[in-house]
Image (cartoon, rainbow, N blue to C red; front, side, top):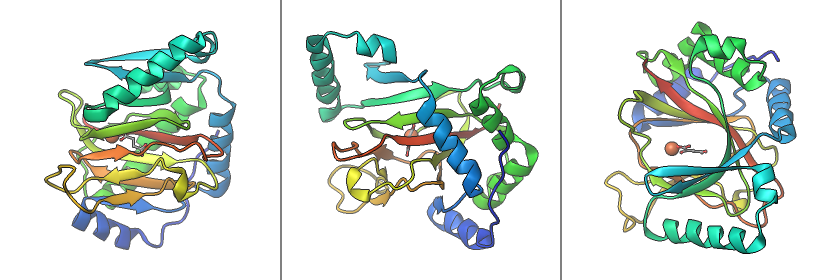
Length: 241
Ligand SMILES: O=C(O)CCC(=O)C(=O)O
Ligand SMILES: [Fe+2]
């Protein structure tokens, strides 16, 4: 699969916004055909793993495991997921991971690994550096994510010891997303608590890149039962080795 950025006459304005706000939302990131092929790829994949926080750890279920799960067990798991979200940190979504090391990406037959290589290549790094004013990163890590109805991610800052994350990116890949379907990337107010009255919500529009400096408190709101499709994205961080 070949990848290409769409022309970017608005680059200066977008860079100004990032400099001012610490985040920017970039419409039509890739050439249309390229974004469509990535979307088709994500829809066709069967190797998604549902990922759920369990205290300090993560539990994961592949699709066959979930399909074989007795209804009562699945209902208990749902209860535990929402109980965890009531006051603490919790998430549930599906993921396909991509290796960090370039040699492993190159050896992989997965087009997502090819995307991560392309996204981390010098031309794209130069584009991201211009957009963000952040130039000290060495590569972009990557995973595909899929949020189905009921999936969400509660507030967190993306700042994890040892990961050297400078900025977070989310390339949204579901065509025709309605704001009412949820799955909004919410940037929480600085200083943070739930007592704040205003927040910034970014709609996961097709082929739109959301990018923000780490650390920043943010969350993904629950995808509602009205959503006609999963909320697909490729997401990760611009990192130093
Ligand atoms: O999917 C998004 O919009 C954000 C995801 C996110 O915050 C994360 O995976 O850490
Ligand atoms: Fe995050």
